Image 1 (cartoon, rainbow, N blue to C red):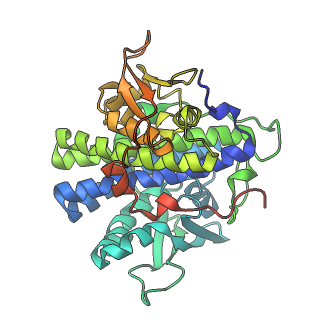
Image 2: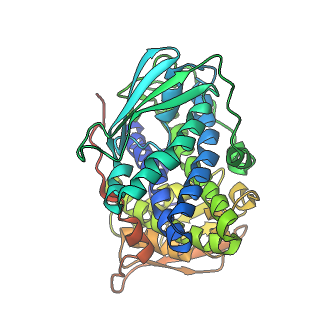
Image 3: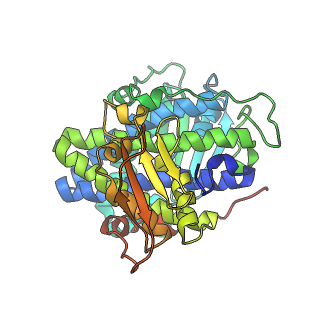
Length: 415
């Protein structure tokens, strides 16, 4: 057992906080990886990777959330919007989606704030056009078609912004045409749907939750949805799904990169992506959870880090009784064959920089060293504390260019 806090120890409000952090963590995966793709192959290849990455993962995890929250039978625009509200591509508030429904087959949304746009605008109009046109057109369609294959996205306006301070940042219509030909599942999604992560069972929530909060998302879309609206049982299942979304996106990223630069270089890029996002998210979790900069705080952050969740997919054991030991064992995540994931990097001993980034984000003097794994595990590391503080790893510093690194949530708690 870990001396740190485990997810099962959290109450409803703490789980809502963790859920928001997991959604933003998933979005930061992209921000941590794409600079390395640009360095290796250029902006146009990066755009192609981003399209395949999101087209591969988003339809798969959208279907899972629809099933979890009991609206997978709904095919109207409202259900399309509900799916988008639980997508790591749209972390709450950082991408501030605002939805309105004018009928079963028509609705609108706008982004009052788009953190992704804030990230790329300083890079120039080519990057803005690439994200808001080249990448968004096919990936938005793939996401909504997971809810209804006859749904279509129609831009009202979008960046580059004219004038430069235009708000909302963009606006879209979603139309369902019963006479339209259904869009087929994108090829990248068919591949990711064959992963062990995609096939992991979807929890069945109780019809009547044990405590307060809702256990499903039946009925109309709530434009001001907050995770605190859901029961503790539902939030435990949702944070599990949000972590799983991250693994699906990382594998989809690796598959897209490998098809363009080869498997060896793609593995190197994935490892650097993992280091960047692992450290960035660990620092955010430490602040959000009030974790102390010592062994107990490190154990808590490791225990709750989304890279190590859900535990029925990633067999990571954190022992914080005395010195902290992290061990990984054979599990569904290490058995993936469709694409490489973070757990495979851990199992192969290629993720030591990511582990160092995690512990160093909580205690700058902490570092990891490999040790003999316990019985039944294949790799293990011991966390050492003390000594001079180490500088932030370069891959974490590179990922920190995103405004998501220091983003603060405002609409939290009960309404």
